[in-house]
Image 1 (cartoon, rainbow, N blue to C red):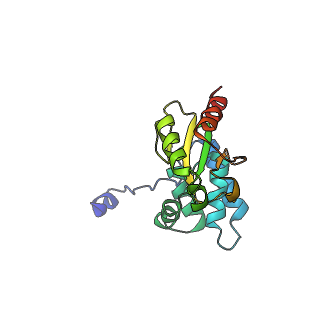
Image 2 (cartoon, helix red, strand yellow):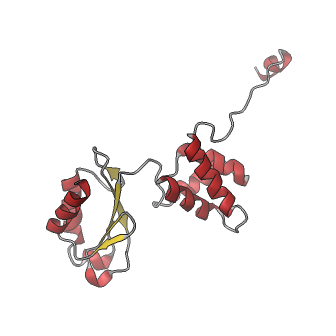
Image 3 (cartoon, rainbow, N blue to C red):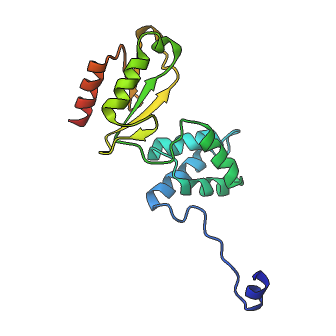
Length: 175
């Protein structure tokens, strides 16, 4: 088949890596690569920068990052899929990280987790149907004496969260 095409003068064209990304996403990925290209161990900082900029690591970004770093797509995909921190889909408007570490478990985090999942109607790594909340697990927020803990949008640490307090927080976010 290949020889037949070459004999006819048709040379298959490879798609440009990242060509399916919207321009804004492509620019964010290239900016992340440009900022960290020369650092040793640059892949993790690049992936963090992409997720910080876009909220997730689009699947089409994997080929572009691999191309820019002279890696295989499998190498980049392996890192993205290994670490739970990276998301492959756009998150909800708010991201909640619920602590699952032992200290929080010892003061009621398991019961809180059950309430959270039932209340939101999703499991970990899921997003509510209205796109308001994405629920993620985290294994220690460093606030062990005041558990159970919840981190909202990466900057609002909520301590001693009860089911009633959780309901209030979600109500405030959806308002």
